[in-house]
Image 1: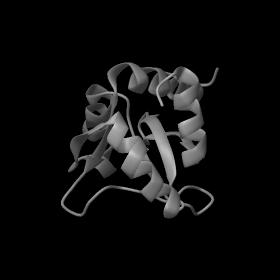
Image 2: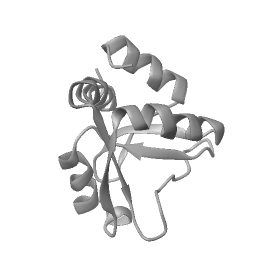
Image 3: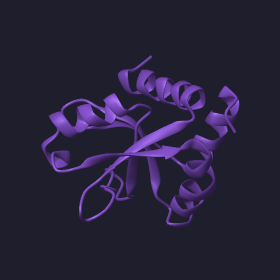
Length: 118
């Protein structure tokens, strides 16, 4: 399994167990950088420590603060809004450039359901 695949598997497992996700924001709001195909992707992490690591190691995120979102709120409010905006979901981005899998909202919901969390 690739590093990104391993990070994604950990994301789905962890959010179902802990019933929360994490993102980051600064005074301008939540990041949703462009992917290589020109679509926006909003990053989410399965733990506070993962979000803090990106803030501490990736210059583009150095001024951000972690934000905890209960899983039911994320599934019920955030994901429908992101789907409507055609925004991808970045799961457990990692590394010096904060990269990883970018998934469609429906893929995220299906994987959470498969793990037993929706």
